[in-house]
Image (cartoon, rainbow, N blue to C red; front, side, top):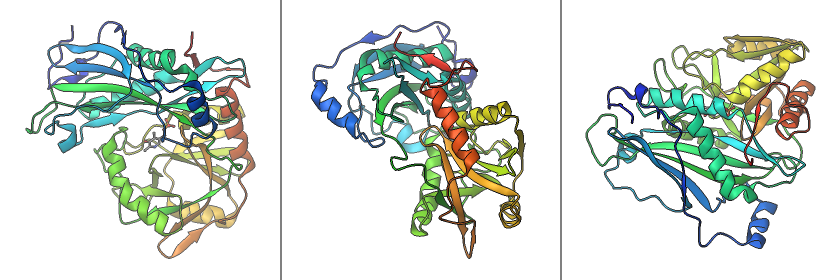
Length: 377
Ligand SMILES: *Cc1c(COP(=O)(O)O)cnc(C)c1O
């Protein structure tokens, strides 16, 4: 039994492995319908037949873990998440290997990050073991939804919401953890193409002491208006500067950013507390070190970007995250300036790192760092 209270959520970790009750769906999609969806899944549009739910209360801790048919949540209109945004989420993928087996990538990293996000949002922490188990439970019922075409996957979305019916402002005493899953097509169906990104100087996504390092919906809500400005300026994504000085680079709305200097140095903004610590970011740094590259985590200013492109010192720029893996950045646009060539081809190091990472994820290269966890056995 958890001894957690609303003021000490750090102790609210379940202390035993939960067991999951299964209620199979009675109207699961037929194989033909599923195959039709998996032939062209897009991203985030279709969901599998089941979902995971685990309840948490101050008195009981985590309890009532279950797999049920996918369907709407019933929330009281006073549910606190709807008013104060106490919510966090995660994103990871299940990959089908050539032999049909199903694997995921560094899930304990996502579990630990969700614990850190929970701590910041005053939500209870789910143990790493229960997090990984919740993913395995999804695959046990909906493993057939993991597509097998190249570069496709089943995107897994764990999330946690405050669902106490109470309008007072404090950490909720009732919380729900859920996992839903959505088949994902190849992000770059026509080859990995560089994107233009928009530098937001009007808005920040995070400030000092804020929630920038937590994976929470509120950060995304704050990024949507600048994201619209990016679209209006012909850009695919928005890049944010640090909230304090507005001079150095934090990250994109949902991806971390890297710079290749020459042929042997990789530079990325250091974790300042307002940057989300990406699992892809960490993995790319490891793969770069394995290649003998020097990896620097430090401040990067917009001026350094501009001067580095002009002098040829910066040879490649890319963004990374679970959904798109690695996205080359051709051009940075802002009010009254452009840095880089919009139609420049993707860089060789960018493409090589992307290839190596996906080769490991899909079992085409040996898993030399022990990053993969089998989900279907
Ligand atoms: C999820 C996320 C990332 C990327 O993290 P990965 O673990 O690599 O998927 C980067 N920035 C933000 C703001 C994010 O929410």
